[in-house]
Length: 202
Image: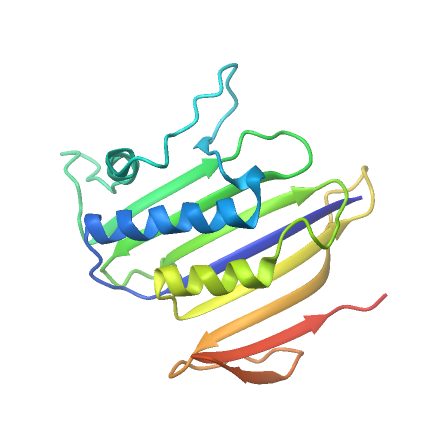
């Protein structure tokens, strides 16, 4: 049985500078490391015989990481500041607790299908409730990124012969002042916004 946990937070076009994105990204890494020691080391996506972990404790390294993810023009290769920065990392674990974290920050232009976002996705061979506090992580990421909405999603694959995942649990968050989507659960007022929880029973 394979369980996947996904936590994502989202916000619209906003003029966040490189320095602002770097400060928030450092806090993002700290939050994930507090959620689990298995989320304390990160490397670029892709398989490699070497484990070249990024020193996420260094401010200069975080700035360099963001700059490597700058959107650039197709021909002149010049940075396009209004499209922001993108970071995609892996924690280097290939079995249980393999995780990816992705961030899109500094997107100023309103582009269809794009938004600023920060997320972490984790795969578990076996789930124990103390492994990862998904709701608390979402709350912290909403605060760190000053996000407008957030989601926690748990899915399960019961068969090694199928790629199909079954939905287990959802948590939706919407900040005060933003439209709440239709969900199966009931919306409850929480500090700074609204929360709805949906649990799928078998």
